[in-house]
Amino acid sequence: MENLTLESYEAKIAELDDFDAETWKEEMGAWSQRNPDVIDAWKHILMAPPSASRDQSLDPRTCSYCGKASATKLSCCSRCKKQAYCNRSCQRKHWKKQHERECVKIEELPTEDRK
Image 1 (cartoon, rainbow, N blue to C red):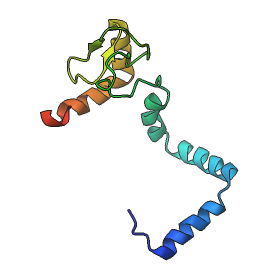
Image 2: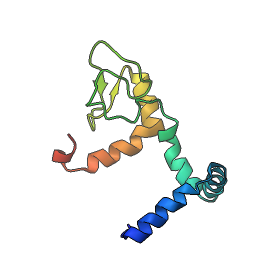
Image 3: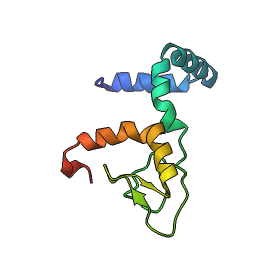
Image 4: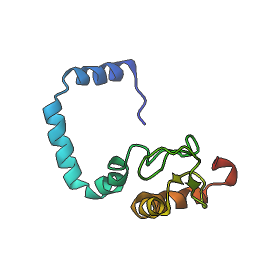
């Protein structure tokens, strides 16, 4: 990360004054076409139901896949204990779509960091 001096900070602020949303959209579109692997890597997060990427230990009564709330505690992932599901079908779908990649990363953390 670059060190900002007062002058460079003021220059960055001046750039914001000249911000053009249309140009930004065009540049982002061109960038995304040059970097499809990055877009694909984020697609599962961006397109997931709102609650799908949350840590379910915060609210264990919301399904990680479908986002439905339940009056009772849901079944947690037996591996990481961070995601909860209303049924086996939601767990399988979430595993294939997203959680398989995340769960491995959680599993690799030292036990004290998994909480």
